[in-house]
Length: 357
Image (cartoon, rainbow, N blue to C red):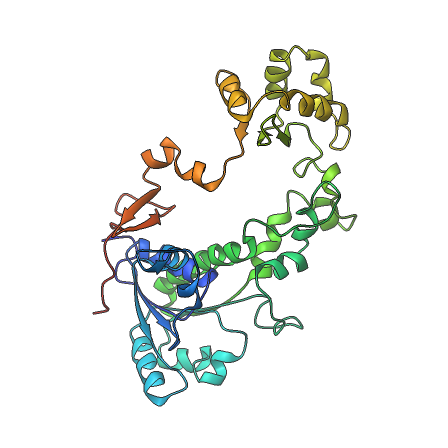
């Protein structure tokens, strides 16, 4: 029994934001019925595969009962209405207007089930001039300003390594669903949640785009403390072609490192505004280029400095503390990432899917 035991979710979403939202609910005991189109969730076909199943699909849909319905047929629509009648939550990720055309818009659904929490996830929301603009994660990041600071040394934006807009929408949607379920305990009524990837991601810029938020100029990476303008929040290349990072700008870290390197005279530069630390950045770049990454890992072991090696995912998942915390496990021949939220009564997420009762 988990915190969400007894909550039934009908999940019509595909790919990433919605499936992540509903999987996190399933991890805590909610019964999630994933309704896929006749051809299945496209993520099922995504490589690589392990134990006959897409690693992507399995790691976003574990713990769910999956069925396929053709909502363009009377039989498919009848079956979906039967599921909705018993549901607490409905999650969908179609483009705005599709659910209405299918006959399953919020007005129609809430008329039959007034207690349902209905969550729509889209790129730019259900209303406004961008509502029908097609977009996946990278396009939303571009519209939201984030891609402009996901740039290389020459200022050219590069493809982001993290689908931040997708993930932001999934997490925001989860929070909204849980808030609506709590509110329903008082009102007895469900609610409609218009979750946009753009809206969900935009607040994440507060720490880097303060000037623009206040009506001024946008941030420029090389002059911004968290984007490359500070020596102690920076990536450095090592002698073996790999990289390390300094990840803490507090004065104590600068003192600890620069004293250990015999350059206390450079400590004041670490407190200069971002964009005015080129001398210190150059010194550290030259210093770190003299040894290999793992040599620096050993050297930093007894130094109180916010430091980290840049690892690839193989190295990340093989770290002893990852294994020790049970953050990855093998179930039925397939590797799964553990829930990030593990409460005292979180159900065993390694159990096979159960059919709806």
